[in-house]
Length: 443
Length: 93
Image 1 (cartoon, each protein chain N blue to C red):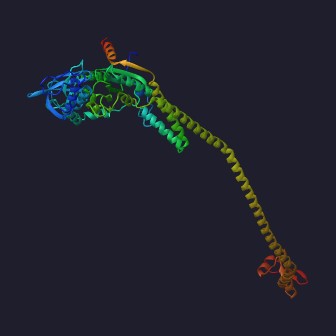
Image 2: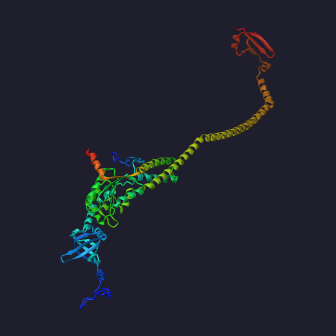
Image 3: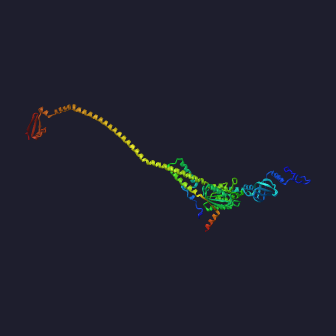
């Protein structure tokens, strides 16, 4: 073996006489060289049954066997738990598994025994033990039944007064939730429903706690939190009864049990799924009470300012309105004055017009008077003379002057017929130069 | 705690009615207050609307303040198992 250490002549005793093998070598050196050699072997996958599984604090040991032989296997505890989660189930004795890894050798020491093992770095459950596939089937079934949507339809209060929490009593989740709520400035009522969340049998206790929280009433939101513990514990959150119970609750459930990469069925069923208890607490109380109080104070201040401003505006408007009558009167007065002025002006114009019209009439009249005066003075005497001459032509006196006589009765009435003369008896015959009394003789 | 540890929260029944008459949550009330302030700040509201909004806003702020007040005291922590036990004892009596 070329990798074997060279011999050291100083401390080494002499070898076996006549032996063809090189050496002697210090065993520690040989063991270290052996480890290097074994680790250089190709990494492979093996299939077999788990036998004699032992979980130590930091390491996990078991044998992988089949009918033809066996191999001691080992894994780091942390890696083993991650593998169990990925597998969907906790590997146990008798399970058929496929493991991936390579040969390793622990060289031991003066006080520790050496050991060969196949170092397992990955694992898959084979056959009936494949829980992951079963969980996926269950997920599809619940989805088809609408179980995954029920919690999402619930109204989730942003500022609940009472919060229920299902978690392990000794877990870190309890402190994380309390601290997160404190940072939110939330100090309502917390009801702790402690249940084991440490192993695969925790599901019934979680179901019971959820039922009790819903039954006592007043709880507005429930957080199911898992802080610390092993990743394999997640299996209890894939329990069908737990999922169906959560789906039927009227109170929204916030799950914080999984990790970003390992999603449980509870994460799918719950109203909200969070990666940590801290996030779950923040989701339960969406309102940051500290900020909300400050915002509310500011809002109240602004509202008050706006209110005062509005009132001031209204007061100004009212003042303006109260001034209005005086202004109106002034306007009316000015208007009236104007009207009066206009009326006066109009009256003056009218008077002047009337006056000038009267003047014109007077002139016309005076002209007419003049004309009349002229008539009276010049034209009328001539007319009178003409009329007098006409009248004179018809005067009876003129007829008497021409030799005619006028017969009158005693009263001076003209007697114009013989019958009248016989009736009167006493008559007066007027001549141009005087009258003569006469008497009829005929009876 | 008194005899009625989980009576109906005031927040569920004490919410002021919206114009529509429906009771509301803290979130709705806070959102409405913000909307009111935005409207007032815009300067577009008439005098009458402003006074109405201020009145509504003050009622909402009182509601929100009461909600915050309810979770602003000292954290009260209860154990579910003890609570259930006591409720069962009381119901058995």
